[in-house]
Image 1 (cartoon, one colour):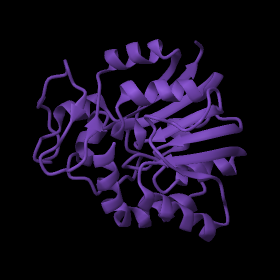
Image 2: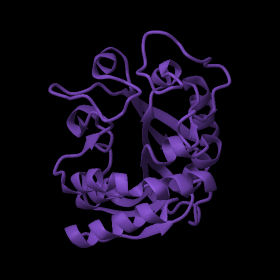
Image 3: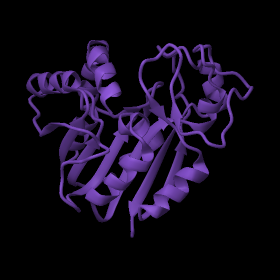
Amino acid sequence: MALNRIVWDSWADEWVAAGRRGWGDDQPQWGIYGAPEAEVGLIDPFDGGDVIELGCGTAYVSAWLARRGGRPVGIDNSAAQLATAASFQKEFDLRFPLIHGDAERLPFVDESFDFAISEYGAAIWCDPYRWLPEAARVLRHGGRLAFLGNSVLMTLCVHDDNEPANDQLQRPQFGMHRLEWPDDPGVEFHISHGDRIRLLRACGFEVENLIELQPPVGAEESRYPFVNLDWARQWPTEEAWIVRKTG
């Protein structure tokens, strides 16, 4: 959406350093605490083919998949983020298409890809009732979609003023969808597990796994104020879904 495009263009410089680290990682790490791929298994099912990263940002996930033999395409709402991604393609000598566009309206024909992925990106910044049907449309039969974002539990417990989540619910689960935080100009989207499963099934997806991430041994406090490490060791701050198109 237009508002999130403006927001991410303005935030792009803050993500250059993290993007460079991601591009330089030999082993993928996921989420705000850097959970290793060996513990998460988000891209273990990937065995090559045409890939679309939905809300690619600086496109380090696409870089990981390219090094695994994939043919990635990154799409993002922010031209500034894509400019950073293009600079890393030159720096790391690894090139693939980068598209300025919206995951809610993908500029690709039906059944163009074997694998789709979103680490945050479309997973929380696009309306799931729009981007998930689009992901299903551009995936081939049998193709997988993997996406990671904030957990439902953390979303229910985080405070409006960005104080760290505690053991009390701060908002209702029924009806959750579009969230706007008082000190954040962007718009996020979060829905319950039940609503997510019904939507995925309506799009022709079968759920293969729901992974609730834990901070790895040795993890340090993250840069984000809405959660702390002690909370994240007790409850999932993030969750990842792996689904397959069967319909």
